[in-house]
Image (cartoon, rainbow, N blue to C red; front, side, top):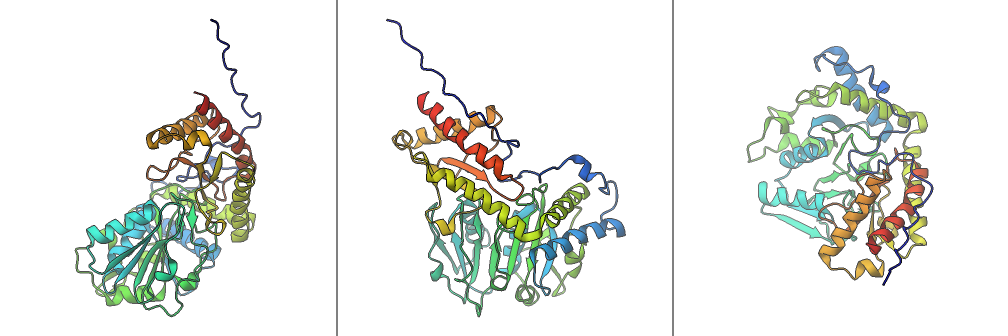
Length: 391
């Protein structure tokens, strides 16, 4: 008996102009070419006056663009946002109990370091499953608090900083790497803020930014950790802050090519209208996804509340009856196959969900991504789902 072959599903006609939707390293800014880096001071010592001035320019432009309070310090440190956070945790924690908010894998990683590496006896984990936030009201203002502002692997963000006490006794230590430049960060409610160049402005990896409030500096100068401190973690000498770190005198040798790239991203942000323009671009990207999801029976946001949806790491779960009927391993394989199909067609690179997150898709919506590309991508996500469902 002859069988009639199932016709191939017709793919959408419109394609994203740029298929880069990775959550890190992220898409370069619109119009970027390598010519933008032609002025990089390659082959120069990073402590020479001219090169140090370039590093300092990254600090100064970042401060101005973010509206950072004048009494905060900001420095370039090694090892991306991870390095900046580890420096903060190892240097500052110990004098007080600490509350750790975990609602995705990076927050859980900070909890592991605090519990298993620093072994702080008075550490408390306030946890939530993917899609939700912990009970923010449970944070004790007498404790230090460690949290991510935006969950890069869950697509969940804290909606504001109302839950952080203005008269807190502890320090608020915030991993904000996929939040700064894309959503408001309330400096008065924070004491340490970290990020990397590779996120919202599309910079190259390996360098971190560490911002310290006066309260954090006071802690550094009054507290000596009981554990050995690696050289690249040390922020003080003889009980005083090493001010040079926050004036372009980096702990170790930075890449001057990456420095030039960071400056290019900052200058682009200034040209398009500064922080309000960056916020608007990321919010428009989230809105484009939300418009598609509103009419979809296949996809939904992983974040369970509209107020907590990230506008950068936009995480989607798959809710179609076919997908829900699969077992755990089947869902993981199907989601990976969908992402692979989109990559094979050069529609979207690197949009599979993070390995620890529920199977689904993760689309970077930071300011360097064009909303037209997001809008073009979404029908392709439906196409990939339908193809895999029929395989």
